[in-house]
Length: 174
Image (cartoon, rainbow, N blue to C red):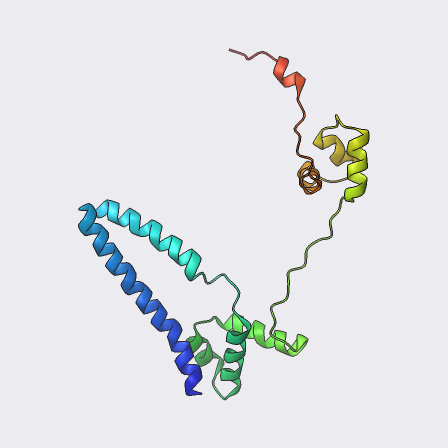
């Protein structure tokens, strides 16, 4: 039990060390540039870069962390206390408990993608038969959007743009 609290406190210590490092860096930039506005700008850029790469809360929590949270909660602590100790929202804890009940595991499930709508072999055959077709024409044939056709053609390796002679022959209004 003490081990779980120590591991939860490591996250808080990381936040403290991170804030101290950013403060020292900010002071160094102020001294070096002798401009508060420039220092604030640099601090803003560096802070957001480091925050988004090193400590982004939108990233999924690891399996070990999830197991520690559930074990801590099951050892007799309240949901509110568990969330406070580990720095997670109540909704996250509810979702993990529900996932454990329904699926029996805390594994992160892979996101489901829609199946690819355009059969690549049929698309390739159509493009070979109609090499001058525009994306919108191919999209009408396969009942999808031109962006979908473009992505499918990119997968196949066909990226040649068609010349639109009509747009080249028009004169500019001026």
